[in-house]
Image (tube, rainbow, N blue to C red; front, side, top):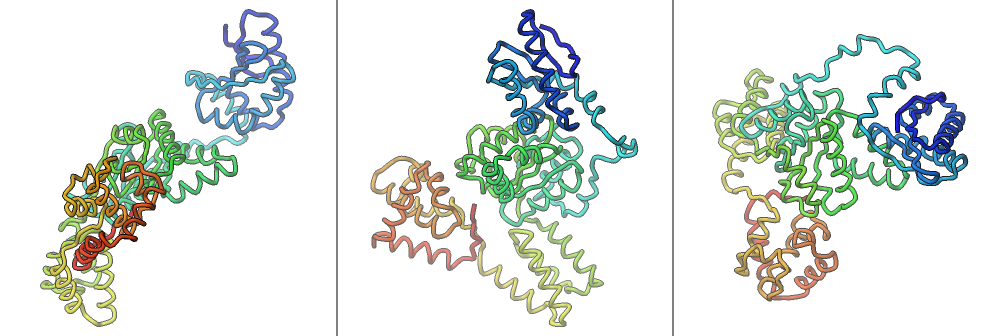
Length: 457
């Protein structure tokens, strides 16, 4: 077999069978004649054909992107002409990356109607100055450094980059900063990703969504923990990450949980994530809070708070930037309305000193149930059906449903991939039995007497 350019501007792979060769040339002629649109002719020039026999046609393309475009635009036409001229029905795509360099440039110049100004090629690919707006401390220095590496050289290091941390610590702000810093980038939150995926499936145009998110140098997806239990979108995320890794492009993911805690995600997806760089963002440290207070105070000619109030605020332990922003907003409004901040700061210090903040996470609830029934935590999540373990499991499921935002399916995945009906049965057992009432009351008193930040998924 050898490669040649036919008279009808189609790329053909010919063989020694003269009859097959004649059929292939006739097919290419008829196909070319049936296509009049300039754009479609461009896409036609991005592929070549190989006739294996009278029933099978290989459509050879240079990339997955070209393949998906041909599937949408020309496959129906190709199949129709192949059936009419040759009598065959099997059209199979073959991706050969070495082929794209042979044809893409020539094909593109044939359909380009206006010359591209050379000035546009000198446009910078990235601008790191957007990172200057971030407060940097020991809590987020590693994540920000890794993010800058991704911006300057997508796909070369830390790929994929996985950033996790509690709500409000700055994950979304970091992803949006990366997006602003690299001109060829795309930020999408989990809800929009899920809606676009479902819409694409329903409307049979999922390739439009795929091409959109895969056409950039850096893809940033926020809050991927909301994909837990959603098999289809998890699989799509896996294939998307693979595409970016194989094409030297970067993926940045954010979650409020470690990759290992994303129960229900395919193991191969978790493996891909762990093969990159996983880094956390912790709660804002004293250095960052100090910078925030100084900047805010400077905006009011250093009259927003006194030196004493300054020192009192620095003694507090905040869990997120959202808490800090709330405090600063209160300081500003008190100043603007003439109320003053001495009383507010005193009340704030009193509140934080009296109550130790704990986070109501699945781990917190699991520890409680494990201690109440004196069974190992691993047994609670296992298939063990002994009475003590089962009671601990029932209570855990009930408290998870009542005190977190986990769905029944997500709770089922957490406790060893149990079904929706099994989880519901456990909840009904606890609600219908007085034997669990004491443990529930103790737990409720425990959280009512503490300042707790609730954790969803």
